[in-house]
Length: 193
Image (tube, rainbow, N blue to C red; front, top):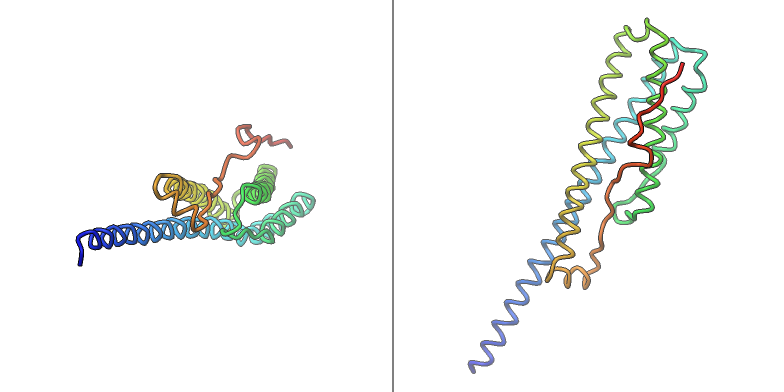
């Protein structure tokens, strides 16, 4: 074989190895984002699963708070019906998902505020356990969202850096949106009785 043929074959092999490892790295990064999104959805589902028990516990003490209880139930239904596939995760869809989850969070906040008017409810063992689980779930949601944003950052960075951006463009790897603070998130909630 000629020396030039060997050099061409080596160059082709190096480019092929770079392409394969680069592509596999992008696939791994994309799967990490998908996994992180699944963790976010799992934590939101955990919260949705706790709500009926919390509502029923409060309902026994606060019969005349039907509007608030109905608002929580309705918000839970909207939140559990909203499905966002990680493959179709656009900034608009993520914003809508956040909005629905935010409405549920606000409704839960109003529900928990009701407990101030019912001292015997605040002392109820079932309520206290559910409240603790819900608080823990809210913390888990925050951590899952933070982890999702970290994996999205790593993924978005990897598809934008040269020379991987060439592979990303060639194989259709697209930038993913972040969870962002909702409008008004900096304002403290108002509790009125």
